[in-house]
Amino acid sequence: MTVPSIGLIVYLLLGGIVAGILSSAASFASLASYPLLLSVGVAPVYANVTNDAALIWNSLGAVFASGRELHGHWRQVWTYGLFTVVGSIIGCFCLLAFPGKVFERVVPFFILIAGALILISGKHQPDLTKQKPAWLKALYIFLLIIVGGYAGYFGAASGIVILVLLTYLTDENFLVSNAIKNAVCGLTNLVALIIYSFRSRIYWWYAIPMAVGMFIGGYLGPIVVRHVSARLMRWLIALLAVTQAIIYFKQAYL
Image (cartoon, rainbow, N blue to C red; front, side, top):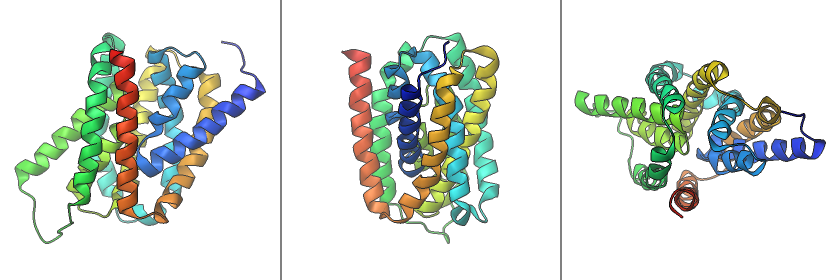
C-alpha cells in the first residue's frame, strides 16, 4: 500500500485519540476505530486485524495511567488475562479459517446484552466477606475464555463484557475493575497481533498513526474516569452499547 497523505495521518491520529479514550474509559474503542478504518477503504476483516495492532498501544497508555488502581492487583491481571488469552488464540484461528458473516449477525444482540449487564452490575455491591460458590467462579472464568475467543475473532464490545465479568469476579470498585480490564484486553490484543502478523494482512501505515492516537487516548481515559461518577459512566456505556448495536444491526441485516 502507498504512504498515506498528511491529512489522512492526522485523521487517523485524531480518530485514534477518540477511540483510545472510549476504550480505556468506556470499553468502546470499536465505536470509533473500526468504522474509522472502514471509512478509509480497508476491508472489514483487515480493518479488524489492523485495529488489533493499534489497540495494544491504547492498553499501554491506559495501564501507565492506572498505576494507582492496578497497585496490588497484578496477580488478578495475569490470572484472568491467561484465560482470555487462551480464548483469543482460538478466536484468531477461527477468524482465519471461517467467514465472519455468522458472527456479524450475532454482534448486535451480543452488544445489547452487554449494555444491559453493565447496568445490572451497577446494582451489584461488593461483599468481600461473602465467598462465591466454586461453580459460580468457574462459570465466570469459562465465560472469560468465551469472550476472549470473541475478542480474537471479531472483538466489538468484548471489553465491556470482560468488564462486567471482572466486576463480579473481583468484587472491586468500578475504577479498579476497569483498570484490570484494560490490562487484560492488552494481553488479548498482543496475542492477536502476533498471530495476525504471520497469518493475515495488517495495514501498518494506518495502524501506526492510530496507535499513537490510541496511546494518548488510552492515557487520558482513566484520568477522565476518575472525574466522572461510576453511575454516569455505566449509563454512558449502556447508551453507547445501544448506539453500537443499532450500527451493527443495520450493517448485518439491512
